[in-house]
Length: 172
Image (cartoon, rainbow, N blue to C red):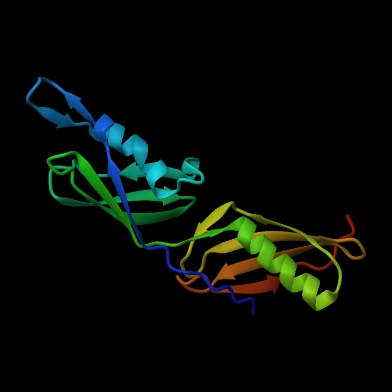
């Protein structure tokens, strides 16, 4: 079993979204829902906002709303607090992310250590939500044995991983 310590990603984004407000007169402002929703991907995954799809937020007229977005094929929920009188918006998430690059490095380190030879490892997809049952497919190449396909399964929301060889050797 491959075990990876992973902190649950629980953080508070605070964004002053002045551009989400459009002035209809000198004395009033109106929240622009569409502009806000366009900014959500950059708030949730600043490293790669393009991974966020299918954003759904109710009209932000209450002080707290629950929104959803898709990361790959997984729907995640997050809370939006605001807007307040100054236009401040808080986006609160409680989901973690596991990056394929981190999984690749973890798998490479484990295999290199166990077998004493250097491997190349590429895992896909680029990111998964840290929840039980999520799967990465990894291609492992070593100079003497060819190519191996591994499945790396996420065991829990802490990001603990389980490694399985799913195909035999291919010198292809």
